[in-house]
Length: 322
Image (cartoon, rainbow, N blue to C red; front, side, top):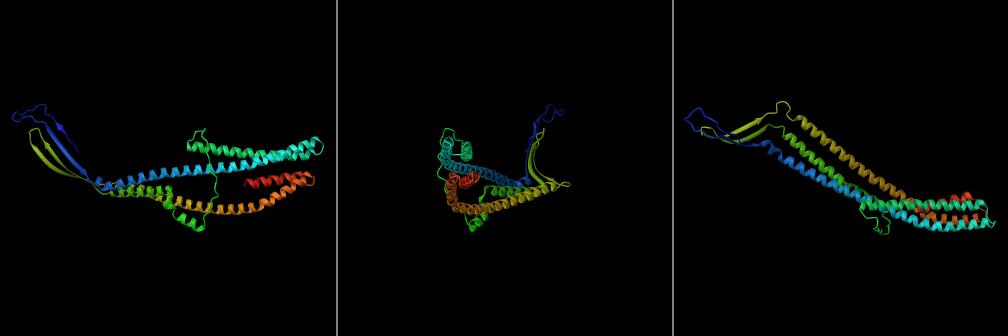
């Protein structure tokens, strides 16, 4: 719309009175109306993409909190076990020191018991540090004050899903994971931008009406049509850019989807292996514990090498912590 205004300062012809001249014009760009739907759809899809990306960040925060919870719970379990082991081996070390002072034990026996106690204390300190680091990380993530006591519920044993459940979950990934849905929304937004770029290649037509009055008080009403012809550029460059961007978004989405499916199957295979290893450890721990008790009695009777006894204690502690 335009509205020029002219004011007569002086007139050389006394036959005509002096009037202020004005002009009013209103025009509509038809190309803007033609691309309005595509631009509106692209903006709506971009807004949806931003919402889904924010939701994905929330999912990642929840996953990080769960990881810290598991780390703290496992570290506390190791801490409880190693604290009990420390009491047992501390008594053994004290007993060997008294025996050495009385001349009933050698320096090798005392040194071995001290080495076992030092190994247990080192493991206990590592478990305490892991629990503290996980607790501090969880507090910082949740925004909890340091003086608030976080009571963690007992850690349940998670059930490993079957192959059919993993296949069904992998098939639903494109519709369940917010990051994949965000990429889909971004691709849809780019589709609409490409559509708008294609429509913008057509000639730009503007239509409008005008009303005017000149300085001689002559009133006029008119209509006009403006046609802009894209003789040289014709918007081909912008269309090519939008198409290349759409292809890139498609490739990014497919790569993210393939990575998500591959990671899901990799985790499932690792869980299967860990489950087998855990089952084997549960079967071996009683036998290993029996061997350790027998080795301790033999070691105390000077019938078992100190180095072998120390290695057996370390193996039992490592298996128990696992």
